[in-house]
Length: 456
Image (cartoon, rainbow, N blue to C red; front, side):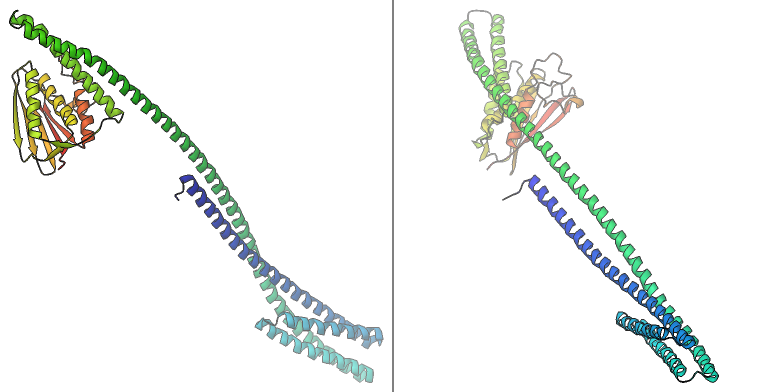
């Protein structure tokens, strides 16, 4: 089942929206995952920095407790020292677990463990020495232990500083990545919202345009229906007029011909000219009605094209005979046939309208007794008719307009006519898939070349 344009547009738009939402969701999910990873990394770094701070504070408390115990001998200071040592070892164990995946930091932590162990050993040695001996010489040994402890403390502080610097650097990198991810997320949401709005506005515009198109189509359909009704009405009207006019015209023509036969031997020939004018006017009126009816039927689409076997050469000769009999100007007609014209198929009525109008125009716009040539040429795929006269010719600026209904050339002067003949020719040629070409010079004459496809 074929989809309408509106359904295709709607489906395509929905597909684009789903694709866009899926893409945004995928990018957003990835961005969220990166944000969570960075957040965990930042939290982990802060925990390490906190443990380092706690370790340093415990180390300071342990040193303070040792000195207090040595100088005062109070057990409270010794207990404070023991508690601080426990905290130091606990913090070192936590640090060991936290940075076990970082080789550089692990190496530094190993160094730190060694230095701490050495310092704690010195502190324990100092306490043991105090408990065994409190002589001046022992106090001198305590001073040496303290000096060595201070050196170890400086090295421990340097190692702690290196570890902190590395963690701070990682923290800054994580913060920078997080900041970038947050900006990217904001950009994605902003542009996603913008694109969504654009697509929605596009859908609204498409639906609005589709509704307008439907309205225009409906108006065109209504206009077409009205045009068809008007064409049918015109066809019925002109058919009725043609029927109603042809009956009295036939009576007038028959009566005038009968009167001419009766009075031909009884009155002078100059009086018979009036009967000739009556007959000419009746024939002209009948021809005009035929042209109008043909044009009306063509515009209404009721003019049919039904090719049938036709002896085209005999048809042309009969047409010339009938025209020559009615010609009151006594033109000379010359007919030439070229090629094999057997087995041709044409619509006789349409062909009659084409050639009859062209020959009548040649008579109308040519001087009396000037020759009119009709040349029939039959080829394998087409048949051409050339009607040539030596009349007044057609102005160059009029050539493109002579096929318009009721248009007459600017140089026709007092020659009577309706301007329908060539319009009828054009309509008939359209039905026959034929063409017509004009060659004309003012004052020299006009040549019409009609080409029709040959139906075998």
